[in-house]
Picture (cartoon, rainbow, N blue to C red):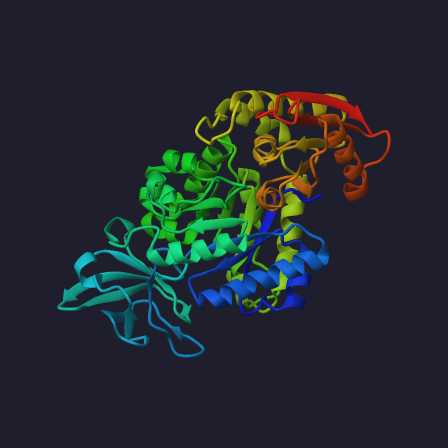
Length: 476
């Protein structure tokens, strides 16, 4: 069983029902819809198409709607894109309708007010970077530091501390309301700078509402990381924009730090941007990309994300399959003992998440992992209404699968983001024991466990319990 989850971005290359089915078969756990391009109606239609494909396969595929945020967009480049060579001079303007190798137009009216000489600007995920060398009237003059090909309408990354647009934007709220009404499982909020940005979205706690994912992509977000983690349901390490606010040499260390802080609080964390970037146009990744993915797994990431590889790449199904192969092998080499020791030292109990008895749940979930090792259990069976208990177990990275059972369909789909968990919806029974018996039946039916297999079961002692307070060792 592969433990690290795969988030795949859906776009022109992958939005067809047949391709989606193949991506599910190849290992996609979460489908991401980027809302920065296209209309709301188009995005909602894609949402319905993904949901239909998941239902056809009988899979609990999570759907993540990624809100546009206060992104500065460039006017479109010519069809086929353009190439920026190193050292060339480029002008930046606001308000024009097209972009070229000589002039890059943006939709940000405060461009010349907010950008200073010496600032570094970047396009897209940072493939092309510029240094501003002059300002005159309503235009900037910049030199290409690192050149590459650019196409479409890429974002322009400006120093985040000067960006006047706040998060969430009016469009973010409009998109979020529509997707919440549609039943989306997760919402990612872009350019988060503080916990206030998360709370401003105004959604109900998961699973009544979507799991809110904070994208860490600015210096302000790193500086306010603890507050953001406390207000979020999950976190994404968005390395493209983060690499503009920080020197490239710091990125690997920031990634490790962010992952560790999220796991300490029991939050799923996604590592994103350029993980298998060469597969946008090539059938195989580079050796460095394969190592990057494996090292993210060893760092403790819950999920890895494919962006352009599946949205516009030549073979999105193969990109998912290759990612699944790399992560599965890395999972098999994961050092569970070393990880458990480290998590025990850094773990913290989230007292702000609206869950009763978090300290009891923390103690029970930690004990469950140790007991599973001691008795040679084949799985840890979690009865969890909200998914909170499952995420608490997941942070300890047990050797055995975490089999999650919840009566809430959205909670089940939200667990598609959590490391090591496989979730199934099962209804409440009149008693806890009957609910457990039904879960064990499903464990045999859905996950291939056999009569005589030992399992560790954790649950509340009664149907009204607001915390996980009971641990049992049972035999199927």
